[in-house]
Amino acid sequence: MSTSWSDGYYPVFWPRTPRQARVRPLAPRLTTLDGKTIAQLWDYLFRGDRVFEVIEQALKARFPGVRFVHWSEFGNTHGSEEREVLARLPQRFKELGIDAAISGMGC
Image (cartoon, rainbow, N blue to C red; front, top):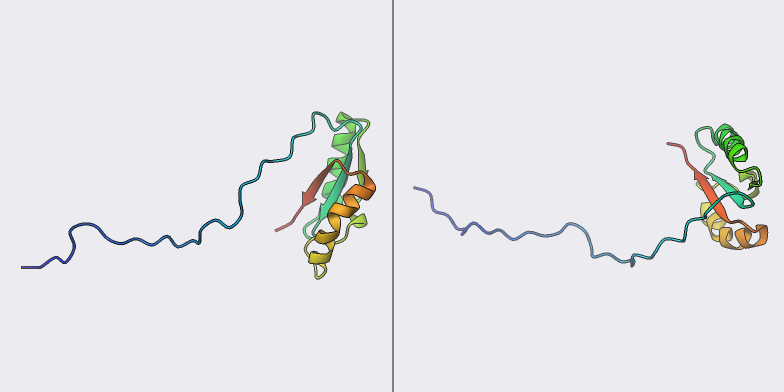
């Protein structure tokens, strides 16, 4: 005969910590890309140099007034200077009049 020390309920512990950041609303979406300036951000992995060319051509065909700021303007978003590159982005975006960004990453 086996004795049970439980009444069917067991203590459970959540393995995560409480959420530290508050959920913030997303930025409003652009109604069009025509006339907008888009930053290309890349982590220098995979083939972003080629991928951004293809994306740029396709978007220019659809939105003839769109302008792009090349990924080389910003630096490697995943390299040894990642923190500095990312910290500079808000100011660089203001200086260059960036309306949106495409962030490319490779795995």
